[in-house]
Amino acid sequence: MRHVWLRWAGLAVALCGLWEVSAEGMPRATAPVARAASSVHALSGAVRTAKRSAGLIPAVVTRDVDGDTIHVRMPDGREETIRMLLIDTPEDVKPGTPVEPFSLQAAAFARQELPVGKRVYLEEGVPGHQRDKYGRLLAFVYVKPGDMYNEDVVRRGLARVAYVEPPNTMHLSALRRDEQYAKSRHLGIWSIPGYVTPTGFNLQAVQRASGGAARRASGGGAAGTRVNTAPGLRLVGGRLSVAPGEEASITVQTTPGALGTIEVDYKSGPSHARGLEPAKADGHGQITWTWMVGTHTTPGQWPVVVRVGSRTLRATLTVR
View: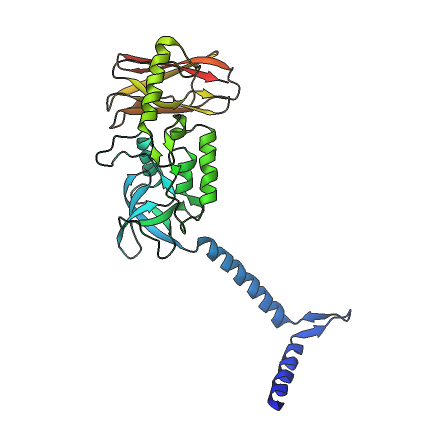
């Protein structure tokens, strides 16, 4: 017991030595304590910074497969196939599967944001749940710390939130918000009614949309969706009913490599908006134009004319 009291007494003396009495009679920390407090504050800041980037593994892109899968080289030199967590883009490379609308746009966005040779950052799945049944590494991919590609592609309407399997549900709330943003604006995959389903993408909905457009061309129909098609040139997607200040889009199917032009005629004359430049059909024959409808555009129904060689497709854009 005597030794215990001696240890307590020694501790009390030591603590007293860390404090002094101010002129006002109040105790204040001595210089060593102040320096220690400053060091603790700096250390806590460093810890917070480390936490923000904790778990992010640098890697280098070696190949883009599609909108939700890439190949990378890890820091130890290993090659890994990365399947991005919680997202699903339309298919364009799956054997035996037709090319799905907006798959090519999703793949192009991946090549733009995650080009071969780019340094990216991976947030792997929860330990023990880091690979799918095909052996691919599951991860959120960051273009740079703080900028997640998974969110970017969903917000553009090029991917749906999918494969939600605990415990890999980090960032699910943010991704749901991004999805709702794209859905409410009818961007990309959300521009075709019924195309996005809880289990994937419904090609029958695309066929119904195209068939409906053709029927409306001959028999009239809802404003903003009337289309006159031509052999070898048809509408496969788009957003043609918008409010001023929103994005409009149109996707057509034609011959791979063909050059297409588009003209949108408002009350003031042909639009010169960015995004309406001539474009070449990709390897699957699709061309997509996306442009911003000006905030002062007069509401009404305005003609959209797409030309590919001698073929012409006419649609109607409704500005609400």
